Structures are given as structure tokens and as C-alpha cells.
Length: 248
Image (cartoon, rainbow, N blue to C red; front, top):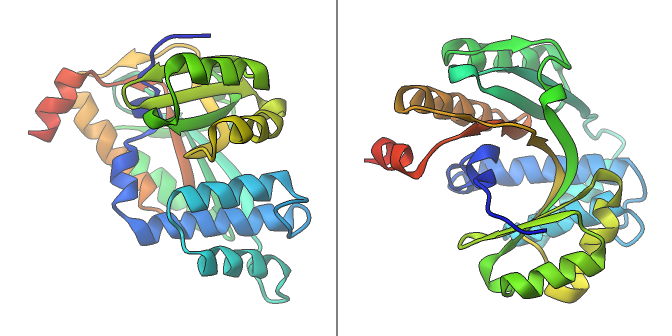
């Protein structure tokens, strides 16, 4: 249960999303509303809602926004969102999974297909790339949550499957069905995590050269800008050297 990972850039460039606070809050609100509708509108009685609320708090989302999102779940005229997954191929042979919450499948599918086609990719059928990923639970803590040994010990006691610690923070993996239980146990030991969600972890990754990386990041940014898109996952790796060239 140790190692180092480039998962931060495999998931997507989180920093780019963090700069768009209103967009981020909109996505968090939608997840809270869907989670509240999936069970009790009480975070203490609804594990998915509790995780959604905790993630929102970790992103400094105001309490009033969180409560409004919960209230939407019980409102008579509230939106009805559907969970949809899209799969496709990006530049350089990369495989991409897009998770969305939408009230209009046709609108969302058109937007995502356009993003792929404009940025060197193509949208495939459901299942076309998912076979190359594992469905796991993901819990992320900042580096100051504790030393690698402390987090490793807490993760093992909580029942996690793997942990990857870097200078950027701690990434903890669990079986999908154990996510809520492990997250609860870790919160008692380490405090509130930065992020808790079900994830798609690639079995193998592909390295991106500068040209393909530039196009791929445009694709991911375009997907992130879509209000319906919740998360973008991929099997790509971009080296620090290539990222430095792209950021120059």
C-alpha cells in the first residue's frame, strides 16, 4: 500500500477547474441535489449526500448554497437530473470517460460529441473504453493531513486497498462498495478529506507528447466548462517536462 502516482493529471487539471468557482459550485450543487433525491435529504442518514456536502465544504462552498441544493431535492418544481456516462478516445490514443448529470440527454450528448470532434477525438459507445479502467473509491487528503506513515496506518485500519503519497498530497483507493465506510473512518482519524468520490482508475496509461498533450488539455477544459459534466477521467500521463513547455 505505497507508491507514487501521476493521478492528479490523469484525472484532469484540477487547478483549472478551481479557478472557475461559479462553475465548480454549480457542479457541486447538482451532485448534492441528486444525492439528496437518492435517499433521505439528511446528510447524517444519507452517505452519498454526506460525502457530497463534505466535498462542497472542502471547496469552500457557502453553507447557504449547500442548503439550497438540498432543498431543491424536495421542491415540487425541482430539476430532475439523470446520471449519464460517455466514453471516447482523445488525442494520442488516450481513453476518456465523462460523467454527467443532465436534465436533457440530447443537449449533453451533442455538447460532448462536439468537444471530442473539435479536439482530435471521437465519442464512442458506452463500454468502449471502460474495460480499461477499474471502478474504485477515491479519497484525497492534502499533504499536511499527516506524514505518509500516519496516513498509511490510518488507511490500513480503515480498510483501504491502496495509498499513494506525494508532495502534493495523499490519494487513497478503496473498493467501490467500501468508499463510504472507509471515508467515515478516515475522517475520524485525519479530519475532513479534500475529495471523496467513485473514480475510474486506468489499468494502463499512455504518455502524451507535447502536441497531443496540448490538444488533449483543450478537450478536457472544454468538457470541464460544460455545466452538465461532473468529472472527466482519462488514462493519459503528461510528464513534468511537457507540462512546463505547455505552461511557458
